[in-house]
Amino acid sequence: MTTKDKIARRKLSMLELASELNNVSKACKIMGYSRQQFYEIRRNFQTYGTDGLIDRLPGARGPHPNRVAEEIEVAILAHSLDHPGHGPLRVAQELMLKDVQVTSWLFWAGGMVILRVWCLRRVYKLNQLFLNPLLERE
Image (cartoon, rainbow, N blue to C red; front, top):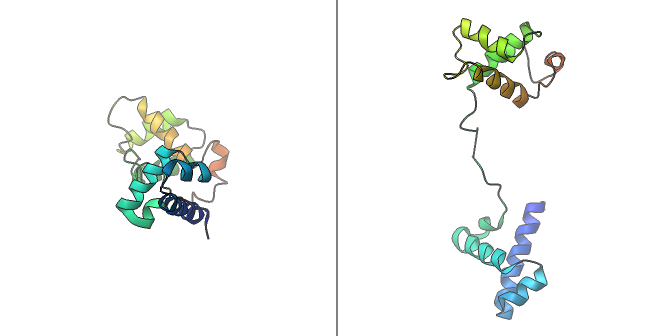
């Protein structure tokens, strides 16, 4: 049983305890939840059933909407492998010469896109480009 399942079971037992005692405040005090949390848990349980008791992280599902396209990431990483001495702005300039559109607005933002891709792929130092197994050259 995972931690999420244990938390969901605890929430369900709190709901059952509240119905047995007919007192939300006592049930919350016994289980260690606030009344506001109780009503949120109850609403989720009534709306989604037992799946509503499982904690979910808020945020975007799937890839982030502002993420760089995969073919641009590949071009950035390939150029960075071929020219490890180039900084982010130089990489953006070289890719623009090769008709790879890194960004459509302010020129300096191209360097920021490069940095974002490097951070996303966990390439903090240029020498890690050669050591990172995620970056395979073809």
